[in-house]
Image (cartoon, rainbow, N blue to C red; front, side, top):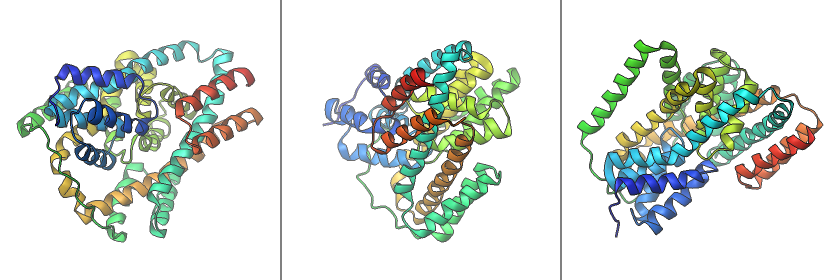
Length: 383
């Protein structure tokens, strides 16, 4: 029988889990074990329905699942404390690592380590492309759409336009069956007025930021937009970050962004925590906070707003076709980013060995944290 946890219990439980949240979506089974088997906050069917929801909407899957558990157990306040508790350890550690990076990244040993890690990150993005491809490219139409998306991104077309066009093409070309309904989750009711108030507070926060510091507003708004279109999990944000941060705004070069992704992979939490690194390098701790809030807020709001109606969406053929097209486009975008990241690495024999070994390990399902740790050690000794 599901129990009603206190908000404190939710926060502390997800804070503890967030400390060890390496591997992104790989954390979802651990969240389920804690919430369903150990704490009995919800039943298995409700949890699986939530996982399906979180895999469909934008944002980092594990973060979304943590918020969903809190939403189911204690409504909107429960979603908020679970979401913050799960993500806070990654944010805190990323701020510390970013501060260290700004002071040490020119030291010879640190330069060598990050050169090796850049090769490992290329392997990780390539592995994500392969994983996405296996899961989503089921038919020749899927492959063609992914190829078209890769070509458009390669020609410099804005990824947001690529994603939107892919959704339209998914509706026009695909004929995916609606998904059979799962047991409807019994969500703790939250008043539409409460959600509306949260939207108003968010809008006021952005408005104040606009008048107080336009640069911070631009950073927060950009991260908000990136998360809004990051369908398919945290890795879907990588092409969007690359395009906006490196190519459009030139806030940093590709190698620095690769360093940020590498730091994100040695922290618990999703790869979108790279936003904290970007914000810190641009505007210090305040920039880190603004970028982090911006990159997590949209997916949280969407989860809270969509959860009560998700079963209807799963039955809608047009919805499933659009999501299918969008997911295919991200495979194309990830493929193109893999190539561009690879072109920004100064490849030599040691880096080829590090990158090749990392790719093989990831394809063999070795956890990311161990791959990054091994690449760091090898780079420090050999490069």
